[in-house]
Amino acid sequence: MNFNKEILSSSLFKATTLNGLSIILKISIGFITSKIIALFIGASGMALVGNLRNFITTIEAFGTLGFENGVVKYVAEHKNEEEKLKKVLSTIFFSVLISCFLLSIILFFFSDYFNALLFGNQFQYSFIFKFLSLALPFYIGNIFLIATINGFNEYKKVIYINIIGNFIGLLVSAFLIWKFKIDGALLSIVLTPSLLFLISFFFVNKNIKLFDKIDFKSYNFYFLKSMSSYSLMALISAILGPIVLIAIRKFIIDKVGIHEAGFWEAMTRISSYYFLFITSLIAIYFFPKMAAAKSNNETKILFWKYYKRILPLFVFGLLIIFILKDFIIQVLFTKEFLPVSKLFFWQLIGDTFKAASIILGYQFFAKKMTKAFIISELFSLFILYFSSIYFVTIYNIEGVVIAHSVTYFIYFITLSIYFRKSLFS
Image (cartoon, rainbow, N blue to C red):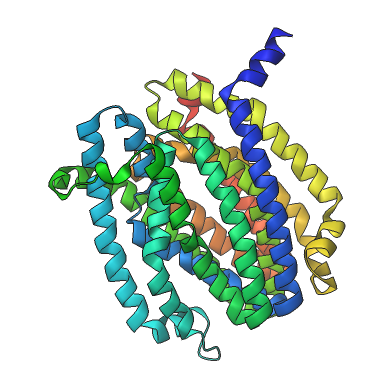
């Protein structure tokens, strides 16, 4: 009885419950958005949307200079030290401001080049990149603000921002897709995150008074150098990851067809919905605590808290999803997407290993293990790309989810061996 009371009153239970409600809401809204996309633009349009999402992930990393996890770590470490905190926030703010300004100029004036690179010359979506260039400062500003809130361990505020953002995203996406079809779908991906800036600013300024802590005189080049490790890790992941996914998608389009590439994007979209539960909980609850952990034993406690309390719930959820897969496809999409059903088994197997390994991967960021992270990231992307080419050649579209499973199985085993002291000591 006392054990149950302890669980119910724990910060992990409270964070999990509130985060769970937020994720259920986000998934529900994502379902509606997916249905709208399926009805109005179909599988081929879904493939184009996937390419743009991957591209924006790369742009996000360039715009933030890869500092997002570094903001969480250093704010968490120095939130009670006023001068050090000013140095952290001021240095990151002005560095990101310059980066964002330069990136916006490049996107605006080279929009035709990016259109040809991402979509091919048969599509004319250069205007999307011009809109992105204008929205980017607000987009990146929102990321900086949320990372700052997260560093203060204000996970409730982060979740509230996500809830509000989900509603805004639904309204904007539904209107734009209904009005402009594929153009609207692409526009919604660009514009929605930037609209959250004012909401994030409200939550930050209400309690933290952020701009009282930002001063150009506090800008510190030595601190910027210490942040370069986070920058390198994030940029490696955010640049090479999307490039590999885009390359795989182009191979599928050439080898199997654009509709099949759309089916994979639909499967990836479903996976991203239920994975929100894991990734958001780790980001807002586990990562700040991992960053502040002073010993292997503290880290071990966090790891096993995740494996004993969170991972079993996630795996149980995957089992329910597999049983209901045909129903989910019909609710989310249209009859055109029924072939997605055959992708579920291997996708869910891979996602189980991905969920098991993701908490270990965050340790690279928490302890600033740059070289080890880069090696592991290059290794996993190498396996993903070449196994996808190999299995797609043999099994057509099912091959890409088989490659997903193989990649994350190997990745989990590799990280378990590397972090064995933190897991088992």
